[in-house]
Image (cartoon, rainbow, N blue to C red; front, side, top):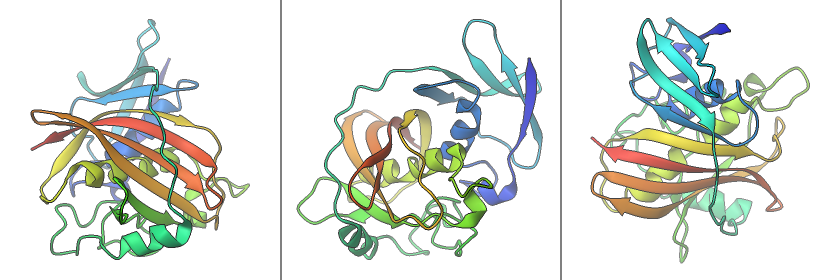
Length: 232
């Protein structure tokens, strides 16, 4: 079975390639439950990419013969911390980097150059006295299906960039997503107040391991993920 995915320019991470969380979320929909997606190459924009089922449970996203990403069933053994309140998450956003400081200011998820109903505008900032970053997020109608339910790829996207800012520490420099394992517990709806959080799990050389989660305003978990990031 072969399908195609086209990553529109709107959904970029770096200016010339797809946002990792969004692309992984698109590919993950070809499997059920907890899914691990590994990125091998920068996903090109505005070009049909082929989704190929390998027959052994894996699903590959391919540009010609080149494998861009690969998905498989995964496991998610992480402890999810209690989230800050929605107001605390909004306050944390005030500590976010400026457009001039940001390494990918047009990123679909966290780019400060993106406007409302264009990017997700998730701006993770440090939460005082907590080892995490957080951002408030209110999904808009451009992200939903006809029933007002936020589509899976955008839930996955919300789990992406908070992990990057959780592991950056005091330094601001470009890092890229290597792999992400995620689970959606409940889809948010348009206009729902959500809380996106990220925290560092460990580091190993150029690798950074992060946990991320999305919560409702009342603190109910909506989705969670574990990701590996690479310094570049």
